[in-house]
Length: 268
Length: 251
Ligand SMILES: Nc1ncnc2c1ncn2[C@@H]1O[C@H](COP(=O)(O)OP(=O)(O)O)[C@@H](O)[C@H]1O
Ligand SMILES: [Mg+2]
Image (tube, rainbow over all chains, first blue to last red; front, side, top):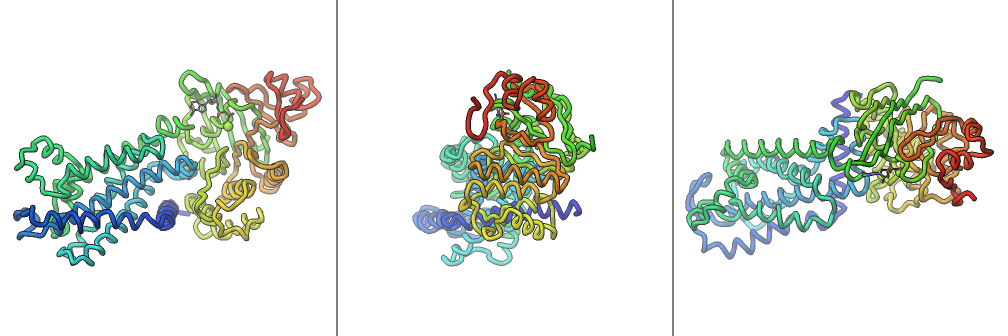
């Protein structure tokens, strides 16, 4: 058996297991879609008038708030699923399945990468499910070819947030700690970003510190990468930040899973 | 002795100040059933974690089927089948899905299907193939784990207290089954246990106590060395601990 074929089979093993488990958990797809949909419908309705969106790149004319908020909500879908994958890693560790995975005859970092790819695949699935909701609500998005351009952008952002989840799974000892993760990771990342309003709004209202924190938030760049890609534009800065963050997070996670120091040692 | 499928050369491992393994050496030959006998806390599971590459030893060397675990990890792991002390089955997936997952991780390709069917046949669980593992009894779950460990036809089978939680009949059946495999396939087996009566038919017994290898000999030779009539007596003499069996403490 060639090693390329072996590597591919291992990816199929991890991805198909994750997908089967995803569809077993009935509520997961539903809540993944409902969460951003609520924002889209309720929040955006309330904000419609408060919010005069000036023309700012990548937009070429005034846009509705609903249109503005979609890339951020896509980011939210990716962010939540990244954290869910982290949870799944911790669960697998408690169930002993991580042992099985890590004793497979392949390089360990590759096996972790399979986990990451599988999780990102599920992220994309949920993102496109949410886009169907957007279509149903007649949001004026650049459907074609915008959503095709958005695919690689969402893929990269999904990988980055999945790698974050992977890294967090190293330090999270127990499943119960998910609530803490929500408070300390998901909410700050989401709110310190241009997901809900453009960052210049923050600056304008004098929130300098928050503005700067947001600039350094990798999630900000994930959202902007997606936003620009939807309009056929390539945001180089955002892409570089997302790629760089992805590499760093993944390397740290792989280091965390190294048998010399990582969690396996601590947990026996 | 024929060619060794497992070669452990003065391996040590500490958890902080606790020396869980102290210069332990052992080997398993093709077709040999070696029992690793030691009370709880002896370091058996720690040794298994080292043998599977989940931990790295502080010192010493491990070779599986002539491959150095450190430098040729993938080749070494490919020759290895493991049943861990705690279950590593995915309870939500079916029996077949669990086996297929493993087959793919080992890159078995088209051969997988046939091998899975053959192993299911062997353990008599063809009918349960599409049931979730959760629906299986403890004994059947263990069988699935053994079947899975054998799927890729390893040269060495590691079993860490595989009979824990099984009823006496299932225990005996599992032990006999592994003895058969050893004879039939020329499989090397390292069977860790704290129960003296499980090691009576072993080719060799290695006594591990507080991280040290106290003895390595055939069951008869072990009794001879200790000057006792049976293994339980030898165990008591060597370790100073009360030997345990399936039925409980030996009086
Ligand atoms: N992850 C760990 N961290 C710290 N100490 C451990 C860990 N795993 C095992 N130990 C200790 O190492 C010793 C050997 O344990 P173990 O290898 O599980 O023995 P056995 O499997 O023979 O019962 C015990 O004293 C145990 O408490
Ligand atoms: Mg143990």
